[in-house]
Image 1: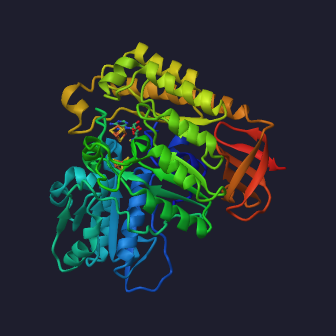
Image 2 (image 1 turned 120 degrees about the horizontal axis):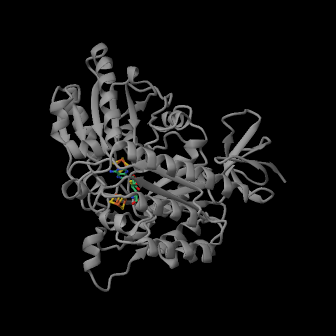
Length: 497
Ligand code: SAH
Ligand code: SF4
Ligand code: F3S
């Protein structure tokens, strides 16, 4: 169950990030409904129950589905209440300081649960487990298990030991693990849309980012196992898959070697790239929609854009994080592209896929050395691109990253917040402007369920990832044509034609 998720869920789940949106009350409320997901009560009578609470990005949510699958094989059922659980797992995020604070607060809450039920096993998984390792066991006395993202196969063994009173830790980062053979148990599923992890880790070294340290080296999963998983979902009634990776355009697989760095050193090896993979998944069935996230501006190729154009069922939406509109800041961020390069990629998207292709971004306000003029360049980039949506954050220094080592976090918090507010305001204006362009247009919408605000209404998304709410009663997973009659900055409203 994702606690009362609403429209924002549809926006934030593509990337599944917790934005630093503590500036606006409205945004605050939205953040609350999106900041974690839990297992549901699966109703299966089992002796032991598992409760997982997941934070961070969609990769983490996807990992929780793998973890559930691993423990289900050990006879665990799932529960939506930590109080009923025999094993409580918290799958954590380290991306910003606030994300880690939230986890610390939850651990204090679980402390209360453990006082009432001393036999419960408490485990910390994910990026914070990987970052802090044994320190977590020292600092948080209630924690019995600490497992990093590549160590989940070890869970049954460590849970068993914890039940015998022995604390356990495995934060080994693998160069090969992709969990390709594990069929994830879908959590929080609407039965229509699902996520498929196509790669793990990240080989980029963006100077602000903790992910390469918490998720290890980049490796791509076998395309055959990806196609099999997508086909299986389609056969079970799902109609949309989102291919997930920190940098999907960098996907590169060969039968001989799945570690990207080692593969790049080999010559004359047959490989599958991201455009090839997209095509393989698109061919499963024209009624299966394909989305993907996240694209990196340095890696997105025209070949990918042309493949998107060729297949109607590959959705015309690209999440292409800019981070900043200023070339000096981008260089310090080690993003390896500049403003001109980014604009060139946007122009390629517009010329190959047209103005209706949805584009969204991640933007960081107040990175080290950012001047007022640099910040203005972020705003002018937003004006140029006309993003449909942006995930916006202010810079949060993370221990161990290149930026933390090399640059002073020199922008005062008030200035970061002021700039972030300006970015949020700008985005709201542009989102409304973009949605207004859709008034009077008709779109094919994949129905995902009832509108959360009204029982009489249904909702789904169009190819460009826009949420459309309309009247009617149709089965989930069906496609309908909807004419847009009204809009806000976040949602389109329409009627079936
Ligand atoms: N792999 C994706 C992003 C993963 S992290 C990409 O390269 O685009 C998601 C977003 O969190 C980043 O795009 C960035 O905008 C934000 N982020 C990462 N580290 C951050 C930090 N230290 N402070 C603030 N925001 C950060
Ligand atoms: Fe982090 Fe950069 Fe990798 Fe994205 S591409 S996960 S921002 S290091
Ligand atoms: Fe994702 Fe957070 Fe880890 S954004 S990769 S869960 S640090």
